[in-house]
Image (cartoon, rainbow, N blue to C red; front, side, top):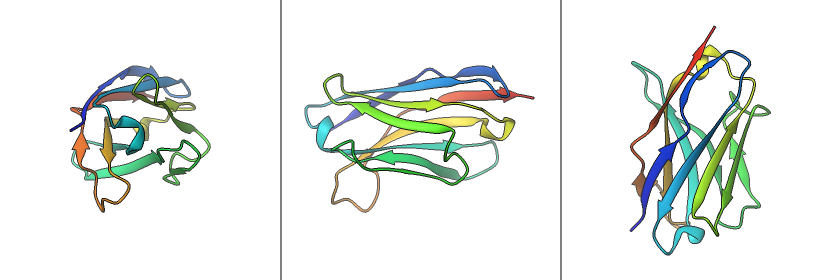
Length: 119
């Protein structure tokens, strides 16, 4: 069982930066694939980025590639999303999620943190 709590969201001007954190509880955190998703008002939840349990493999949505960086600290049971060069279209509720490497879908979700980018 894994519990996830996001933090770090807020209001920022276009071109600015934010770093989101996701604190995970559970002894098996280091074995899970971790991901970030986002959901804008009136839209479906979209994939943003994921990172493997070894930290060596990352994958990003095209819309954030080159601007966002996903990382994890297994010793602190924490997942991060560094967001630079933010755009108004990045405005959304951001969720972290965890899944076992063999799972087809994400098993655990956080409650989300709001990111608002003003133009």
